[in-house]
Image (cartoon, rainbow, N blue to C red; front, side, top):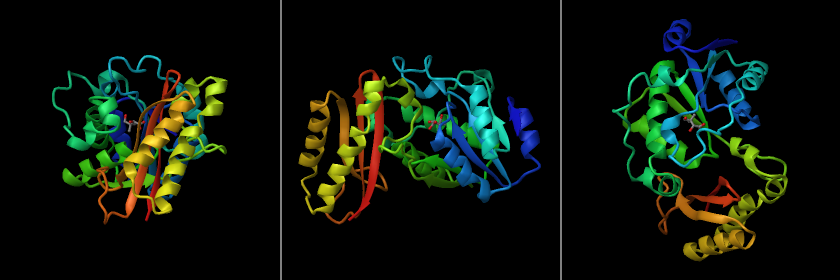
Length: 276
Ligand code: PAF
């Protein structure tokens, strides 16, 4: 496995492999990330994983500084998973000058997580476009745990005609249902025990939809109230269309229930898809 820090070295290394498959990450890798690498391996001649904590997607009061950096452990996991190239640039490599040009995603970036985290998806889309230009992959894999990110990036690739296949991989969960996330590491023991309640709240909402209930607002509000009663501070529980995360109409069948809520100081997100 090659560990590369500069764009020039990356391009030189990848010029020999026309069909690389790319997994962008911010490091602090868990089994969910490693599953993405496993998905990438059979799809191309070379699996590239980037590790870069992107300041541009963090708000001023968010956890950029304390975001866990575990580079040595990450590299050991990636080597064991069969990763071929780790791209680990520093900030000056990605942002050698102030980033005055940026990807401006449409309204989808301002709802749900975008409403709670203004500018977040602008930062995500901009860095991912830059990483795509550096890695030039034939395909890239993202985990559905970050559902809104997946839709924003898939639409960006389609609208900007980037020659990259976007593959969305299923969320990896702990045995109690908690979606794996780097931010789970912030949870105290008691919070970790409580954390699967978010997933359970979304599953209950999904069951109600499957049972034929169509009062979306009531289902959403009751899910949030159940979480609040357990000590959470919910940002949203929302029933949306999978394609564009807009509120569904009568005819829509492909839905997703998304939730975001704070448990103590930690903000967790999760989602469950359903087809009616
Ligand atoms: O999902 C993440 O880890 C990040 O948002 C990404 C896609 C690596 C961009 O910084």
